[in-house]
Amino acid sequence: MTIQRGFSEAIKPGITEVFWLTAQRSDFESDRDREIYYNRWAGGYLEHYPQWVYTAQEDGVVLGYLLGCPDSTQALSVLDFPGLDLFTSFFADYPAHLHINVHPQGQGKGIGRKLIEAYCRDLKHEGVPGVHLITTAEAKNPGFYRAVGFTFEHPKPGKGYTLLFMGRSLAEV
Image (cartoon, rainbow, N blue to C red; front, side):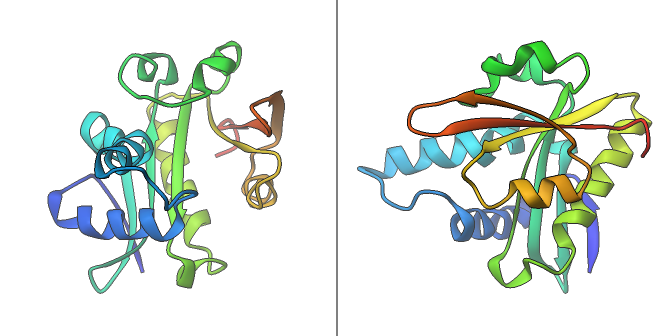
């Protein structure tokens, strides 16, 4: 397995496949609603931050991806990311953020960890002090994020769930 940085149209089908296999939603009122959902959580990154796209591949097959943005304040003007604006007070320490998914058959094999480590090394090289993600407290993934160094947590009530901001300092990377 190799980790590759950068977006090309050749990897888009693999990213799209993994996206839909791991998406929180599968029911949409229209194709347009489905497209909006994809663009919110993946397409916007591919368009605006292609240099911060990471894929884990084996024999040309995308096993997982990480989509990143080194400046969340700037991202507020180009990405339709629900909840991002609720956590701006933490952006000084954790300015970068990420969105990651691993193919269900590849989960638990270290792929997500390798993607995050590659992204964090590159962010640190660029002088970025920290990275964050936003999930929900009720999700299954906070334990994984804690295990890969996301030690700062700040919850905020959402609509029927609790948004969870998780930050990782890059000082130790």
